[in-house]
Image (tube, rainbow, N blue to C red):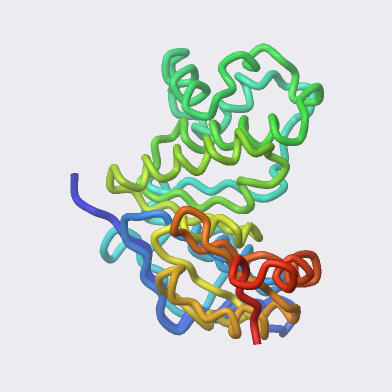
Amino acid sequence: MKQCSVEARGLEVRAGGRVLVRAESLRLGPGLHALIGPNGAGKTSLLRALAGIVSYRGEVKVCGDRSPAEARELLGYMPAYPEVDLLARAGNVIEAGTYGASASDGEILWAARLAGVEALLDRRFITLSGGERRLVCLARVLARRPRILLLDEPLSFLDLKNVASVIGLLRSIARAGRVVVVAGHELQYLSAFDTVTLVSRGKTVYTGAPEDIPLSLLERVYETRLVEARVGGFRVILPGEIFGSIAGANDGDLQQGG
């Protein structure tokens, strides 16, 4: 299977004369990629541009030289707040993600099993918890078997068991040669990703390994004090206002930012 990537050059998304996000050069190949930044930084606008569902200036190339519109069958986009018929059954919601393509019951069941919602297929969407709705919407994206997944806050509302399951699933999909981009706020899980892209005030200001992103840069962008710890050799970043007292009491366990 030929490897895919999604690439942006001179990308700019505008609304009402205001620049929502700008990315001069961004290339994401096969792997699991985190897209982080404060509320309103431009993460969703960037994802929507890469998915080709908003107008943009510049170039977005998918799997070579195809535009998002030309590569629609290769892209899977999960919005943070999907529009779903609340009275539809979960199985119908997943089926709707195929955009009218013929999806067999077996394919719907396959996607539901991947997302851990097989037992929910006959439940109406309105009866599901926030986390269960998130998992059903993830299954809806997976049902299309896209080469590139663009997921907006897929970890929101999930309990710890489901966070672990979803991250494990996305890592597995990425290892199979897919591009998986996850926008969110869970800095404590960054070490699970291959790369991280930080968005600040509409601009991409860092793309690289999670281990290498400076704590001082994160503090400037998020405008708050942060601390970091090592758990099993992995870097964990936490809000300093909550854990700062722990750092003072257990010097060496947590490293505070500047």
